[in-house]
Image (cartoon, rainbow, N blue to C red; front, side, top):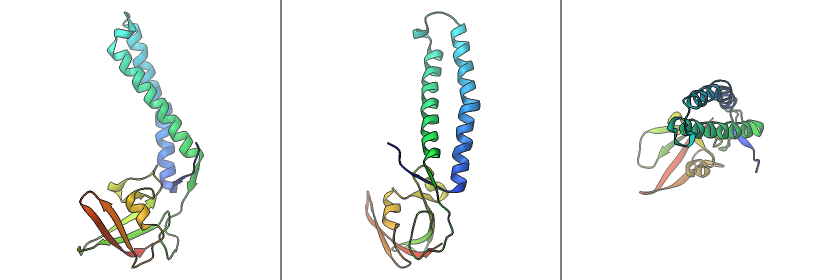
Length: 156
């Protein structure tokens, strides 16, 4: 089922580059591995290298289809727009209850999410909790150790 995928312009370029690499580089590498494995002769069903290459080929083809679907249904989000509430593309500065430190996140679609880089999915518990809040609003996120409360300090 096709659905829209929220991507920043940078995220779209990254996915397009990954797709290009899979199609032009990785496919050729796998084809060469398969060719070499077949040249070895013998029963292909007992050839571990051939089986491994076939499995990797299937994974790459699946990833190509997944990326093509995301790109075809991409909804580009522009960050930095002025908004009083948290929306897709917002950069949000939050402070955890009981902490003096703040953290900044950009809310993006799931295809672009990368928590280590500060990009969280709007479908994640944190992303869902932040959506629609204003500065001063509180987001409660369920965590394994209990609920964590964040206060929105800034929206960009």
